[in-house]
Length: 358
Image (cartoon, rainbow, N blue to C red; front, side):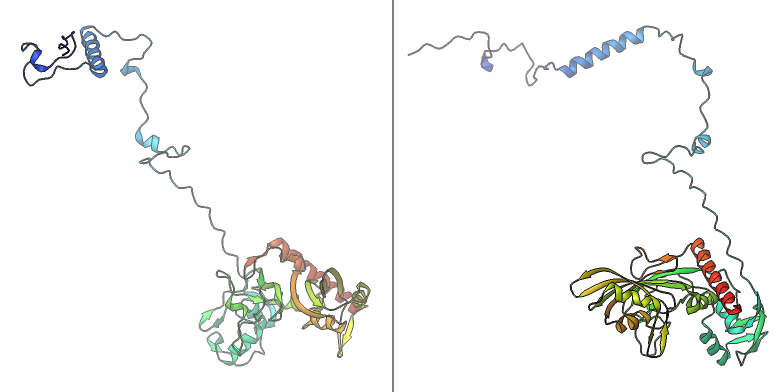
């Protein structure tokens, strides 16, 4: 048998340790780095407490330091954004002042009451004539019985007991009409109209002219009945531009013959400019410009030359274009474009006067 090994100074069994080395039930504290750091910090603190701290010469004394700004003054600074939670919110920026509402005109040149009220946005002339027949319009509290009345002021006129606000400056809007809707305020047959899909926020507006139920594209809306009437007249000469998809075969030379006008079923249509944009199979895409805007003018003239229109989109009315306005959306036309449109109407009226005198 191998003899047992003698201990060499390592850990031996508990029975071989001297009983006086440690108290029973207590393990000796094992030195750690944390305890060493704690001991060193305590020694440095004791030395610092025993020494007298000398003030630095370059450090200003507490009494000589400048006073810190008051809390109210710091809070009043708005040039720095608040950061982090708990920071006071900055004061809101002042709101821009709203422009004063436009001054409405109550004095007018002598004209029929239906025309004046249409310009004031009460309704179309036919609507106003119907209101008069129903006794809803009064002057000085006396209900009217006939629309055959010229007036020079709107100050004493009421509609359903409410005074007429007067004639406001004309406002003009463009609207992207989709196919399948009538250009009318109401339809006795119950068919959908543009009034069912106009976006909210518009004032009371009336359409300028009409687009057929299956015609889409640019439709002008205005608050001024007189401007509406002036734009609708064929004599105004404002160009209307359409993109047309038509089925059939035709040459550009045949289309150019429409520049001289055409007479169809006893109705004469003025000059029409038509150009082929592209061909897609048996369909053609055309750009057609008219200046009269008679009922179904584009469809009838193209059918007269052998083309069947299967899509009609108005893309411009004078200087106002449809551009990228989405369907069923509307926006207000800038005053500069409205002024340009009015100048075109004025020039057309001047030319008509010269032609009449000649």
